Length: 129
Image (tube, rainbow, N blue to C red):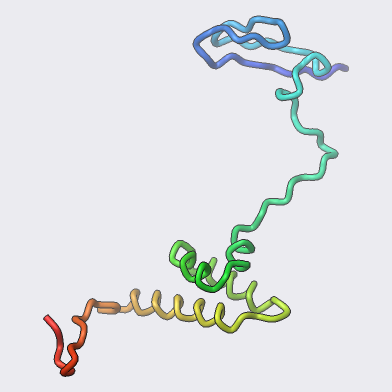
């Protein structure tokens, strides 16, 4: 039995596929061997592409760039990132310190009254205005 491929024209004007006009809103069925390759499903025996883990890319960043990326991560991502860093042959102490500092900053922000703006101290040790 020959497989078929259905191609639908969702546009407002006629669409030409393999020399055949498909009017707007209509579907034309092609035999699989006659259909253009861009309309065929990928072969099942093809190896699936590995999806890149964005945390692996972040874990490879320099410490200064790593610190800048942490604010956009969830707490779970932060935990995974720490685990990735610890799993390295030579975990970077600076990276682990940045991760710990971000955890502390988040915990302090979540605490009642945490991370309130305090005026900077003046040279005399008095509070500024």
